[in-house]
Image 1: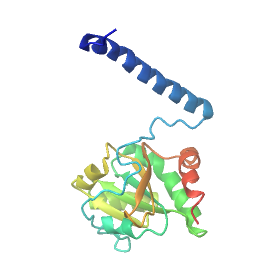
Image 2: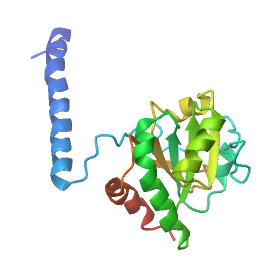
Image 3: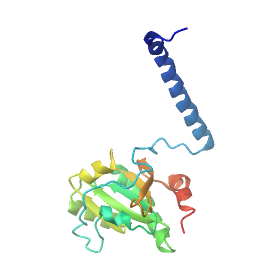
Image 4: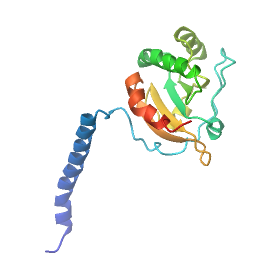
Length: 199
């Protein structure tokens, strides 16, 4: 029997349904295994080098906290967890106690992880006040008042987080990305496994 264009067009809905069914089965398997996270996004940047983005100035009221540039990722000696946040973001308020707790735990030993921040479309005075009240967990922070850097990172909202591993040839490689606030359970399930082989 000769396949015609009509036969191929008729088969498209069935192929699409099969693809959706396979994805649904995979999701159910992940739920059953306890490691499916609907906010963990496999974006085009996942598995790719850190994108080019404009150099971000530091927070003016926190001179000891350096800004953020593409070059900072090129000489990484340890993984970096980059948080995209803003003082006007309510989920960021819910997330910050865990980030602060994580920062405290990293200070007490040889840190396998650095916590950096990208402050998205915020006013410096508001960001500084927010960090002072919340307790600053970051060792590096860039102000992205225009939102251009966030576009280059593919950010769709705040909060978001990226895990970047050292990659001398490419200047850092994104291995994980999530929208929404980070919790200890998510950290243990999705970030720690990436760090287990890190000295």
